[in-house]
Image (cartoon, rainbow, N blue to C red):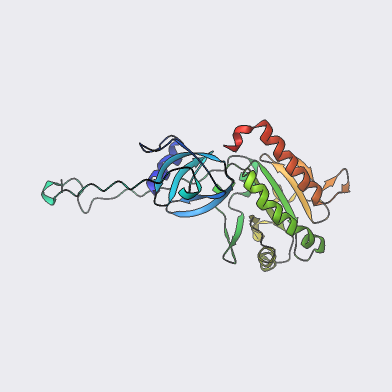
Length: 281
C-alpha cells in the first residue's frame, strides 16, 4: 500500500484503478478520509455522504482513493463499492526455478522516500509545521497534508479565562461538525491567548475542540496569523486560502461578535458551492 500511495502522490495520477474495479466511487454514508503517510494515518478529512472520489485500489476493509489533490483511504462499507472475494495468491515457484542470482543477499537497497505535502497557498505556508491537535488527551503535531484542499479558514482567537469565549465555543464546536461534513474545504484554526500551553491543552480538551490549533510556542512569532485579531476576544475571522478577509468580528471599528461571522460562513460556503458545484465531488 505504501508503494502504491507513494507512486500515486508523486505522479499525480488519479486513474490507477485495478482492472475490474470502477474508476470512481461514492460515499453512501459520512466517513473520514484517512490521509496516509507510509503505512500510518497522518490526518483525516471529514466527508459527507454523496462525495465522489477516484478509486486507486482496495486493501482489506478500505478503498484506496484520490480526493481532489490528496490520497487516502475510506472504509469500503461506507461506499457504493461492492465487496469482492480476494484473488487467490499465485503458488510459489519451486526454489530451483528461481533466479537466485538476480538479487544478491548483500545487495544495497534503495530507501523509500515518502512524498511530503508541500504548502500550496499563503495560509498553508503560514501554518505549515505550526499546528497541533488533540489526540488521546494530548496535543500532537498535525501533518501539513491536513490542510490540502482547504479554501476557507476560520481563525478563532480565544482563551479559557475569557467568559464570552467559553460561552461561544460550544456553539462553534457544534457548528464545526456540521459544516465540515458538508464543506470539507473549510477548517477552523485556534489561536489561543491563554498564559501557557497547559492552559491551552485543558481548554481544547474540556471544550472538545476537534479542530487544529496554532502551537502555543509558535503564536508569538506567527505575525501573518495573529495580525487578523482585533482588540477583543472572542474573535472569529474568516479568510480565504490567500489570506483575504471574507468576514470579521470587527467591522468599521465596531465589535459585532463571532456569531455574525459564523452566520456569514454558512452563506459564503453555500454561495461557493453554488458557483462551484464540482467542488462537492
